[in-house]
Amino acid sequence: MGLRDFSNDHSALALNTATLGHNLEGHGAGWSPEQVIDACASRRMAGIVFWQREIGERAVEIGNRVRAAGMEVVGLCRTPYITGSDAPKSLNEARASIDMAAELGTSVLTIVTGGTEPGTLGVMESQKILAERVAKLAEYAAPLGVQLALEPLNPMFGGNRTCIFSVRDALNVCEAAQSYNVGIAVDVYHVWWDSRLHDDLQRARGRILGYHLCDWLEKTSHMLLDRGMMGDGVADLKAIRASVEDAGYTGACEVEIFSSQHWWQRDPDEVLDTIVERFKAVC
Image 1 (tube, rainbow, N blue to C red):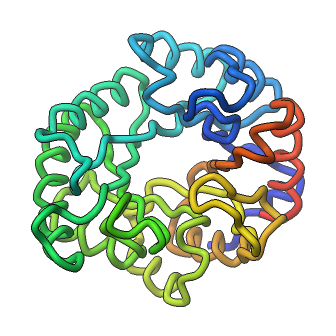
Image 2 (image 1 turned 45 degrees about the horizontal axis):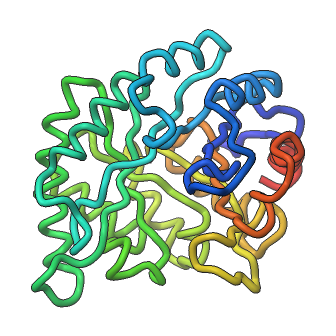
Image 3 (image 1 turned 180 degrees about the horizontal axis):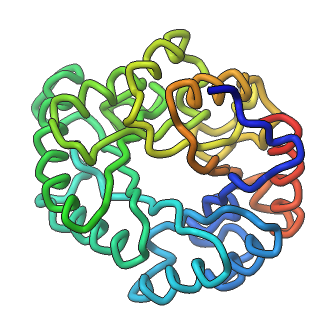
C-alpha cells in the first residue's frame, strides 16, 4: 500500500499523555484525564494513550469517557519491568496492568522489558527469560482481548531499561514466546538510527501494534527527557513511517515526547496545536 497522506488529515493522530508531562510528578500542567480527553476531542484526534498512574481505579470510567468523545483508547503504558534487577519478583503486577488495559477497553499494552537479568552476561539469556515470561503474560491477556507490544529501546538504555535494542531483537522474542497476541511497538526515538530497520519491519508484518512519533535532537541533552518535537531533529520521519506502513500497519500514530526542559514547560494547548501542525507537515 502507499504512504497515507496526512497533509490535510490528522484522523490517525493520537496523543500519549507523557507528551504533556503527566508521567512524572512535578512536570506538565497537571491536567486531569478529563481535560486531556476534551482537548484531544476538540482537535479531532483519533485517540489517547494513558499511563497507569493516571488511571488509578477509574479505568472503566475513563475508557467510556474517551469513547463518548468519539475517540479510542489507543493503548496503555506500561507493564512493570519483566526482567532485570528492578523487575518485581512475580508477574502479578504485570497481570494487573493487563487487567487495567482490559477495563480501559484498549487492546494494546506496551512492554518496556527491563534490563539484563541478574547473574547473566550479555543479552541472549535475558531475552530467553523475557520470552518465557511474556508467554505467560500473553496466555493471561488473550481471553481479555489484550495484545502485548514489546518496545525495543535505543541501545543507550541497555542493561538498565531494556534487553531488546532493535526491531530484530523484539521479533526474536515474539517468535520465541510463540503467542499470537504478542507484537511490537515501533518508536522513532528508539529505532531512527537502525540501518536495517526497513528489512526487519518487513519481517514484522502482522505484528506491529503501535507506532510512536517524536524526533531525535542532534544535540540531545538527556537520554530520557530531551526528545524533540517532530521536525526539530534528524530522524527521517516519513521514511520510517513508509517502512512501518509498507509492513502493513494502518493504525494510529501516537505522539510521545519526553521533554522536561522544553515542551513540558509550554502551555498544553500550544503543545497540542503544534503536534497537529507538525503531524500534517513533516510526519
